[in-house]
Length: 91
Image 1 (tube, helix red, strand yellow):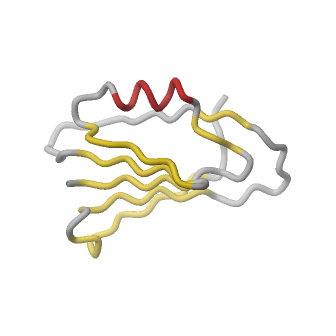
Image 2: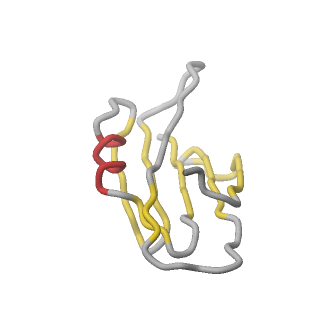
Image 3: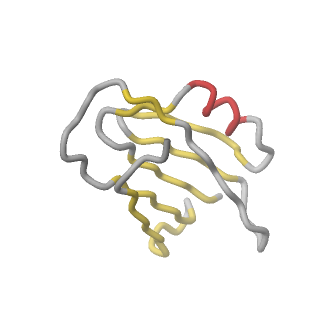
């Protein structure tokens, strides 16, 4: 199983529509939202490229946003961690 761990930018939440669209993908096994982190559990990955889009809604105006992180790792072997960061939000 593969985990995608997305820490959201401060003041933002994932929309319910975004969650529904992710849950409808066959590769997605489960989604959990805890505090400001979204956990996406995937059955497995293969050589085929995958794109995941999270639609966010700003609920609180925050100045000087710090970059959010996206971690991708094997649920059973988290040592092979891949980390990315996102410092802005596309509109």
